[in-house]
Length: 247
Image (cartoon, rainbow, N blue to C red; front, side):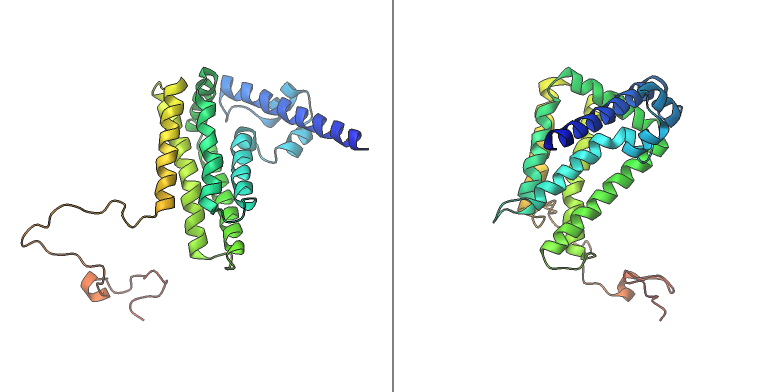
């Protein structure tokens, strides 16, 4: 029975990979928007229903790898050891990524993906949706573990910061590759960027971007403790709480 289940799982993985590779070839040749799911199904020699069973939306054919990695990031936080912080567990897995960028094949794949996404507004929207969904999932996990409500602002902020490092690193690597970077140079740069960003999160923001310029004599001093009248909020404007200042 175990062997049978193993065989079924391997068959499912092969089918999923076959569909993904067929879609990748078509998208690379003709662009995302010009290819239909029916054409992907024909190229993979499966039915449209089978394609949708593995990839619920056409856009998922592009972002399957991204979604898999973000699931791994959340799982790394969930399974971290006793006494280990969320940022450490998250960062350890994220830091493994740059090591896979040292090959020319990696640069070529990133070039194809960046070009494909950059040429499709639908894919750009979908990418933002994917990121938002996994950021929310991480926030819910952190809130649960710290005994807070799902909408806790601190948990949301931490999740956004952690996922923000990942997304910023992806954007940075894409830009570097499109600018001609590849191989060990690309991998070393990505590793440095990830290390610095994660160290900043671990160390906190209190000493980040402090204004060290000397005060100019006679210049007004800006205070964070201003009132609504000091800021000259116009009547009817909405405050951060959603209440009207005219109330």
